[in-house]
Amino acid sequence: MTTVSALDPESIRERLRDGLAEEPAWYIGGDEARRQPPHGHLTPAAVLLALLDRPAGPALVLTERAAHLNAHGGQISLPGGRMEPDDVSTVATALRESNEEIGLEPAAVEMLGSLRAYDTITGFRIYPLVGWVAAPPASWRPDPAEVADVFEVPLDFVVDPANHRRDSYLRNGVRRHFFVLPYQNRYIWGATAGILVNFARTLSA
Image: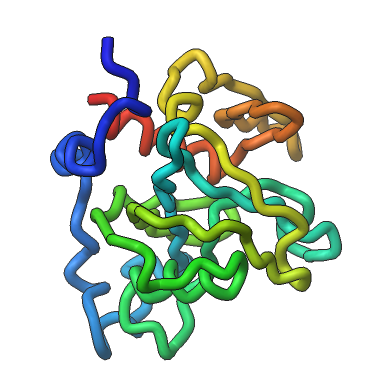
C-alpha cells in the first residue's frame, strides 16, 4: 500500500479534489467577504493546512499558542485567525495570519482548495484552507505575542486512523466528545483535531 509520504504534489492534489468544497457564495471576494454569515453569531475565521515538502515526506505545520492568551492559551492550533475587514477572502485571512504568526510567506504557498467549514461551540465558523509549500523555510519565525512554539507533524501520522482517538470532558452536566491526535508530547484536540481528521478522511478517500 502506498503511503501518503510517497505521493507527489499532483497525486495529493488529485486525492483532495473530490473532497474540497468551494467557499459559500456569500463569502467570495470584495464586499461580499465582509458580510456577516447567515447565522449571525458565528464569527468567520480561517486556518491554513500547510503541506510542507520535506525529504522524509510531507508534513503539516502547527503551533502551540502562547500561554498568556485569554482564548485557548497553551493549546495546539493551525496557523490562522478571525477574518479582518481588509481581508478580501478566507484565503487572504489564512495567508495573512500564517505570515504574522509563523513567518510563512504567502508567495511560498500554492493554494489547493478548502475543506468544508468547521463550526465551533465558541462561536466561530472556521474555513480550513489547504496549501502546498514546495520550499519550506529553513526556520520559522513565531510571533511571541501569539505563538510559543512551531512544530511539524508528518502527514502519514495525521492520516493514520489509529491516531484519531476520542476523548471527552464534562461541563455543566453535559459531556462533550472530541478527537485527539496525541503526537509525541503534544495533545492536539478540539477544533484543530477535528479539522485534521476531516482532512485525513478527505485525503484518504
